Image (cartoon, rainbow, N blue to C red):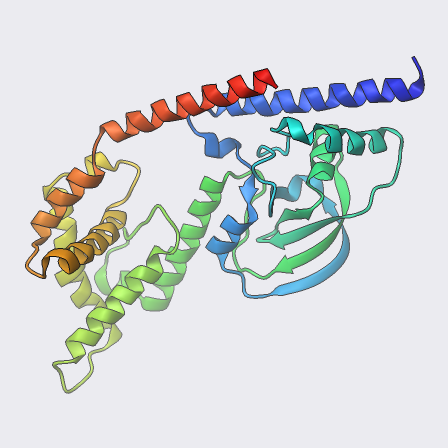
Length: 312
């Protein structure tokens, strides 16, 4: 066997091993597929809302800090192992270049929150991770954010980190905890503290419509908390809605109920009571069987996908 044939055989073996690792990773995270999914740059960008871009030029980047991709996050798993068979030819060409000590052009990366996302060069990153290469040349554009992310975290963990940051900013800038002595305004999704802030500002606006002297922000916060937030929370508790949404928070349910209430009032008029809203909300969104349907649908999609891969 010639040296070129040996290299070709090696690249086929390398790709097969990498793809099998992706398959095993997917099976391991069958019930929580997001944990094995490569992070989408657009998802992180939406959460962090960076201020501006700064061109950093050519840099040597630790491969372990590359955690996601701008456009190919569905083709690779969270460790950059290839998930699709159509990646084989390009992947093997990159692997062959490494085996033959051929220099490859730098990749292009976004830096955001202290970690990196691939703009161009996903296959090169995949091969580098499979080979255990520690550093890679890259042209970097940095997006400015105060939040620092941790490499190795799943999107779920990064989301929690962003939510914690948003809570700290909200409590710090509004003094919400000091005013209400309530420190449990928690959410399971990002962006909700801005929603709460707008609720408070709207509440303040309507109160001031009937007053000659404008009330302070502290008074508005306390009034909203006592007359809007807590009554909705009591409804949530009395209807035992949380038992149907165990992975959510009471504040999540507050936001959803208020939004749903507004939709119902637009359809049926302003006389729609909050108790009726809670009953309707539970009937529409709280079906316990929906979880099992999602699991069964996921199993079905998984089996169909594996069947197609086997045929190819």
